[in-house]
Image (cartoon, rainbow, N blue to C red; front, side, top):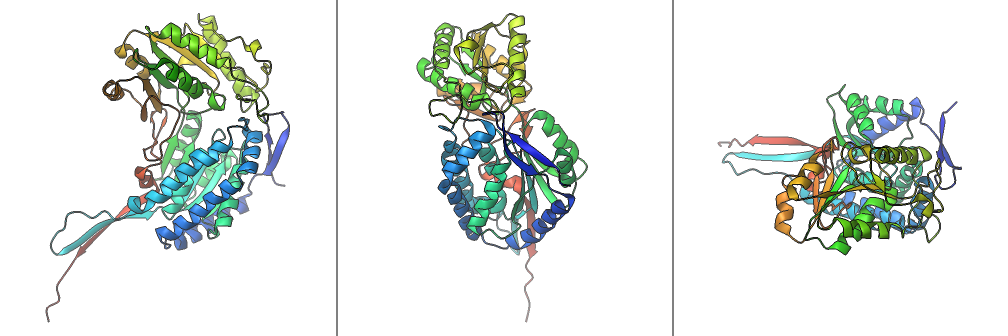
Length: 467
């Protein structure tokens, strides 16, 4: 008998969908089909691949309303925002990676050498296993799915069990686009089954987005083979507001950076350091704007803050808050001012804490929730020290009118992406990467193709034929 799993919607706690885990026979069939299909697919031109991938993107845009509705039911984001995951980020990243493939995959030709023809060709790896999370299920997966296929690989996608319908949407899109059978497939798998698939010699690369603990499990699985894995893991992303920052602009964008998607973003703002000259007005404005959020059913048009993905996630963050309060922090938001807030449910009011320090979990460990701590700092040097005082390094930002200072500070920050006057955004033209416990590897930009291909050198000596 097949094993099943249920998608419990955070909207109402009911079963939204039920799916079956793949059987051993189905897994073997998928791996064999991917291996066969990839050998033919790599012979297609980049232009042919691009036409199919663009048509797959069209499918998502044409079906944006039902896709958005089912996504809100699966993970709880307000429906007023969910379409933008497709119409903005997904579409932007997909098209950029499609358009940049020709240049990124072209032969590398060294300086001419008499009597030789030499070049480096980028060859596809084979079958790529993509392990995608639930918080931004399309945005995170598109970073690898589209460029992997554009590079001539086959893809097997496994989505989080909270958002399995997203994997099925990909399959429908590629079928609509006319992608040859087997080049893209999805599998619903358990953790044990994932480890087994990684161990199969037909998998040539693994791309994982998720928790640090999940990353360790993936690393352990790939270490048994000579296999590379791209790991995008956790974050505790900081922001530093300098004394020359635009106050209203910084407040507006940092509140959004902290609380959008109920704070469930790997690159969301989780800790803020404000120059002491701006600290009081910044905190006052930050709290005032936070109180304007509407927590509630994400399917209602007025809702701007939906439930967290599950009650356990909210409880984890609330425990961080309680620990901080016990150590002397002050909470500036009364949860009861948000009528939908209920302990023991996914519906969690946003929280702003001051009087915090790095001995508190809320300032040291990922919260992945609508909670942020704010600390005053006396100068750039203190801000740099505190921003670097973390085991994470995904993104960090500075808010200032001085671009030279931003570059100087950014050169000292241990992070994958450094922003000036923005946050919580991925530019597909730039490499998406992390340091420390935030992971390794790179997606997006032309550099994103490097981990999805292998270099093959052609060293051809030309011998003249004498008559």
